[in-house]
Amino acid sequence: MLGTIVNAGAVVAGGIAGMLFNKSMPDRFKTIYFQTIGLFTIAMGISMVWNMQHILIVVSSLAIGSLLGEWWNLEAGAERLSLYLKKRFRIGSERFSEGLITAFLLYCIGSMTILGAIQEGTGGSSDLLLTKSLMDGFSSVILASAFGVGVIVSAIPLLIFQGGITLLAMYAGGFFTTEIIQGLTSVGGILLIGLGINILEIKKLRIMNMLPSLVIVAVLLWLVG
Image (cartoon, rainbow, N blue to C red; front, side, top):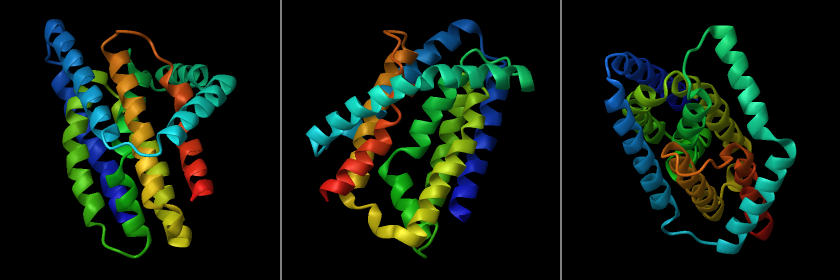
């Protein structure tokens, strides 16, 4: 779990530095900065889906997962939680939930996250996660300067998700096949493209309601495999 703990610490440290940087930034610079972050998020998503495989399973996972998320109304639940945290801890960030979701997808959904957690969980070194920690630390400076404290809070789901994969790999490392890792990366990339569209304010997409797709794609690929 060393790699995951260091990774979460790097996100918090980078996030704090980013928030300090944001305080001295004029509004017109913040606007162009958000546009840059939106384009970067879309570019990251495209890079993740570039070599997509099992297209039918990916599409089916998105459809099933989105319907489940809409049924459970995860977006409304996330907004309620966001409002509660803002009031409870006096958080003034207007884009708290957007920053939290964006950071979670960037830090937690990708081959480097899953492979690093599996490597550590099966008794290998933590080198891959430590390298990822350095990258995420620098990324959190940029994201937190745009989105605020939601990026720092993303360290909590990062600990749960990445740490959960590490623990799972200790007992069932064979579950995460190459196909499952590729499927998670592809679905995560599509969700990142949607987040980029939200950040650029082109159209409001309910990305939170689509998150169950990540579980569905892993289950479907495991059943097919």
